[in-house]
Every structure is written in C-alpha cells, then in structure tokens.
Image (cartoon, rainbow, N blue to C red; front, side, top):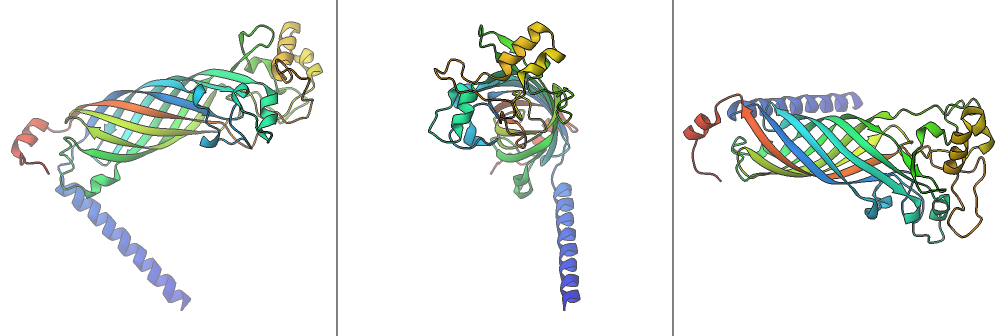
Length: 322
C-alpha cells in the first residue's frame, strides 16, 4: 500500500512539473517576449536592527526593536536586465548611514534596563553593492504582458550583496566620534580571547524583500519596495559579547589608545546620575543574534531599450487596452 502511495505521489509530481513546464513554454511562445535593460535611482529611509537601541523587553533583530528617530536616508543607483517580463536581474549600489543609541530606550523596568544602562551608541557610513533577482509572478496571469502602460505589478527580490561599514562611537570625555574597530573593545584579536577574532569592515549580506511597480509609461516606472538585509556579522555596532578586563588594553594598544578603549568599551554609569557599572564577564551584547538592517526604497526606473523595435511592435498591435 505504501509503495503504491509513493508511486502515485511521484507520478502526480511528474505530471504537475510537466504541466507547469508546458504552460511556461506556451506562455513564452504566445507572448511577445523581448529583453531590455533598465536603469534608475533609489532613495528611502533605512534603520539598523542590532544590539544597540531598541524597545522594552528582550532585544531582537526584527521590527519590534525599530527606532524611528534614528532613521537615516539611503541613496542608490541600479542597472537591471530582464530577458522577459516576469524575471529580471538587478545590479545596484547603495550609500547611507546606520545608527543605534541606547539612550533612546524608554525604560519600563524590564530586560531593556540593562541595555539602557549600557549607555553605548554608534553610527556607521555604509556602502553596499548587491546582485538581486526580481520575480513578477502576476505576469503569468496577464493576457498581454508586453503591454505595460499604467500596469501595476507586485514582485519579490532576493540576492547576495557586500557592504562596507566603519562603526564609530561618541567619546564620553568630549563627545567626539571615534573609530571603534581599532580599539578592540571586546578583546578581538587578544590572546586571552582566541574565539574573538578581529572583525572585517567588509562583509556579505543577503538582501530579500517585496515591492510593487507602477508603469507611468512604456519607458518610465515608479516602484516602492522593502528590502531586509540578513548579515553574517554581529559587529556593525561594535557590540556582540561580554565586557573584558580593561587592564588588558595597555598590553595591546598604545597608552592613548588604551585609555580611549577603556572609555569606549564600558560607558555604563556615565551621565546617568548613578554608579551602576558592568564588570568583566558581564553581558555586553547577544552574539547569537547577527545584526541586520532594512530600507524602504522608492525607485524611479527608465527602460533603455529592447531586443526588438518597440515602435514597430506597438504599431502592429491592437490599440485597445484592457
């Protein structure tokens, strides 16, 4: 009985795949498929999701810890290629700033109090390059996919990217922004912490998201999309694991740098009106939650051309649009 069931399931899967393949083949043959390039610009707000900042309760890397006052703008340019109307590839470059600050947390007497007492902040300039695939599923349901005038199309994107960052924090002594990575604030690269290697300022990410595109004309379109970036580092904000003994800094850094590192590594109690401090071994961040960031982007795109003459095609097609 079990063998017959498995055989039936297998046959059903094969038939479904064959049907779907034949549908896509007939769809591509019946539609006037043309390839084209598209170029454009993007702009929109972005936010950091990591150890610093957040809201009441346990810190997370999702929207629950989103801090609207720390929103910064991202700007970008892109070049896309679509071999057909339902699938495309996009190469983009994005520039912006990420920011996090424990001072923004509103203490409610819960787990967020420890993050507020930590009293750290950061900012980082961001340069990002991505290669993403765009999928427009509703095109498969359209009668005439190449007729795009005033059409609205939802889509999904996913890909791979690389980004460069450089976290800075404010010196509690004078309020100036200083680079954090050279200070090894959590003992990165120290012999006492063999599991804490120096983190690289260029990392990989996985961008993924959804959007909707509206065609103002056959050559100009406007899109709104939300892109979330999953990263593989927990040091975008220079906070990840535990506090270290400040007496270790002079063994690896110059006198001036070690004094600065001690101030930047543990800012608890500063400007808070109390003497609460964290000590070596106490939790500073959550290493199991990798940092993330997202953006809400407005895209203005321009189709640069197709593999066939659009004017000839449009002149021979039915002028009536539905």
